Image (cartoon, rainbow, N blue to C red; front, side):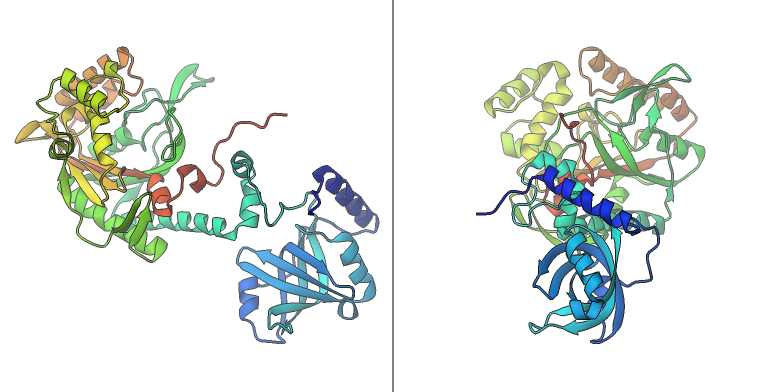
Length: 486
């Protein structure tokens, strides 16, 4: 039967070791580390090659006159071997007595193969770099409680190197996005995080207060959409921003309140050009981040990115799946259909929300990747109308595995039309729709100076979480958790 370690008792034991080492003049947390190579480099070195490596002790096995340890650094794991005859009796005894699993050390020696042909370092000298006062989680049981796992993410990453690789891929995901846009001639910009009017999306904002100005403010809910459009007015023609945005809404497998987003704006381009660029961008992202183009996401298999992406029509798709034409149906008919399909909705939030709720029911059945096009004006307050069908807009969404993983428009640049849509959004907001957009009169004024035809598009880290086929919370290094209760 495995004996459970009392973490407090273990900490007390390690504290005693720490104090004894210090009494002997040992620097238990030195600032300087000697030159060394990674464990990955050590594994490929020649046999008998002298080398120096650093890492955390993940496993320690004392066999009497010989001790085996598993060392881990950012590049991987490797075995180190200490023999009493090689390191000297005193240093060997000190290692056995004072060094524990979790301690970070540096060792120098030569590479050799054990009897089992395992590449190892035969240690000549060792140095303590950081004494761990708490033990690592049990190797076989690990961190079982999800809240503890997310609160102590650093421990989970110590025990699961593959989780660390997830965040290497996440970095590559955003790096590829940035480099693709820069290579296409886009300028990276930074826009305000604190705003007097939260705009650019249908979302509930977080509120805060600026003490020096005695001003109530909102944390941005878009990646500077209305600011980047002002840059189009100013004469810039291609801009993008990658940063954090905040929406005070519910939690789910796909949604967080604090997350990374990218948005670009492209003057003298429309939604058709935008789709061509976006398709190339997504294909580049998956190839550079994963080295493949086929994915399994949620319940969908064989999602292939490297093929022409079809366009599907918003109104026609809903009609095919539900039998209802959302352009001709009354609000009552929409409500009856939602009830028939057992879809949650709030009638007070207006016709646009009813239509959107029906669409989301249909969207969950679409494999993708594909582009959804021609979204009604009622659910697209910032998109330009279709000239031939003014009740529809030049909007496009990327649909993958039943979810929207990217959203773009031919941006509305008619200031009179924009002002009217903002007024309608303000009416919905006054009626209780906290996600309806605010009436930004200063933005409308900027449009009155003239904004060129512009395509705008954005996606969030939700795309990355879908490619990983994991809940979005698990794809953030340190997701928000409630404070620990004492």
